[in-house]
Image (cartoon, rainbow over all chains, first blue to last red; front, side):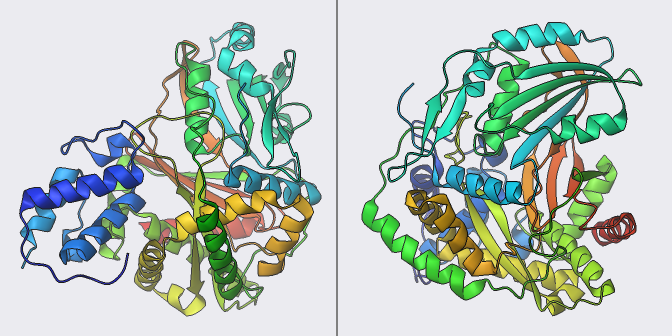
Amino acid sequence: MTSIKFVSMVSRDKIQAQVSAYLTKRFLAKGAKLEATTPFADFGIDSMTVVELVMYIEEEFGIVIPANQLTGDNLKSLESLVNCAASNQN
Amino acid sequence: MRRQSLSGSDYFHLLLDRKMLRNGLVGNISRIHLELSTDVDLELIGKKLAKNWTFQTVSNLKVKYNWPFLPVWKEEKGKRKNVEIRTNLSKSEFESSVLNRKVDNENGLVFIDLSELENGTKHVVISMHHVLFDHQGMDNFVQALADETLSFPLFPNVEKLNGFRVFRNFLFMTVYMLKRSSSKLGTLVEKNLKPKAAPRFRVIEFTESETEQIEKNAWKVGARIGQSAFYISATAKTVIQVLTKRNENPPYLWFSVLNNQRKKGTAGHLVSNQLSFLFFRLNAKTLNKTTDGVTSINQQLKAQIKNRITERYADLLSALRFMPMPVYEAMVNLTSNGKMSSFGFSNLGTDKINLTEFQGTGIVNMLHFPPVPSPPGFNVVVSKTNGKLKFVWAYFDEVLSWEEVAAMEQSFKALLL
């Protein structure tokens, strides 16, 4: 990972597709498939991995999720994380 | 059995074991302690375990060093008797023998004690050498012991390593470690201290409502995405308070935190660690305020994720498998002058197995006792079961006095609550 890129608005679906692809390639076992609504914890995804996903979103899409929005509810699943990220696009 | 090399973190655990044995300890051994209901027939459980495929297979594994090639797992022929039933044990006998059981490469890397104490309580203690299992492996193993219908792959899939990448990361991490660690770290223990007795364990449990309050407090001081930064900061503060009372004023604390490198989305294999580490340095001044401690940990964490330190360190550990053990030990000693770290810390997260039964018998209580390397002589494991936080502190009498531990506990609770 390097510095933050400046990017234009991206659709919520595109963010989800890209984050999902990154998560699958980097962290998931061969053949494992994560549904967007499955809680991360149920899939063995720990807080370190979630930190990395948040940093990936920041870097790839230039979306900074404010610290006060890094709540358990917002970081519960891929869907909630992406919703939170999409709502913070400038 | 297919030919399987030890992972870099397996070999690192052998190095820790070597250092622990050198200091007169029983070795790098983790234990799961289950208290069962009093009506259980321990002999029957012993017989069932003797027939358990997972237990017998793992009992027969040993490490073959194989230098100048990679160390490999080897299966011993014949059945090992690695279960013992003892009755009428006093609490102190139980602590000094069962909770201090030695397991080693010669006699088997896993052992199960089935014990009945004088007070009629019944206990299963599973002693596991850390070269065998990471935390997920232990969970899998205990589940396979508790219910023989469960089975897991013995080893992970073999991944081809990119030699160039490993060599590049080996160089990067060697420089990184030499630059960042030094012998000035604060520690509770004299280097090469040889504890005379078994380690002590203090269990600090919180109720559900206390746990909720602690998690709210973690948020208030800036711990986001998990509470580890808050727990580490509070632990570090209690350590530095002890050192200050001893009139030692170390400039900083230095410690590593385990990072699970297993691929997610599957229960995975039994044997072989897939771990890496993150490294933190907390200046004494930073620890005056919990918020500052948490902020510093968060910043260091983000910087290490950016620099892919966990993957690079895993590559360093992989490369070090080619080193003969004495050379490996000398290299590690060089970076910290033998002090290793200020304390050990592992957050096991929410207990996923949450066993309620073992071989058809109800479990009254379950505890995880970590190994206690000396140095640093003080190790903390935190987990959350049924919404309740549980900290296990492991230490030696020579490292912390009873009064110091009592004061630490009081301060720790006050910091969290």
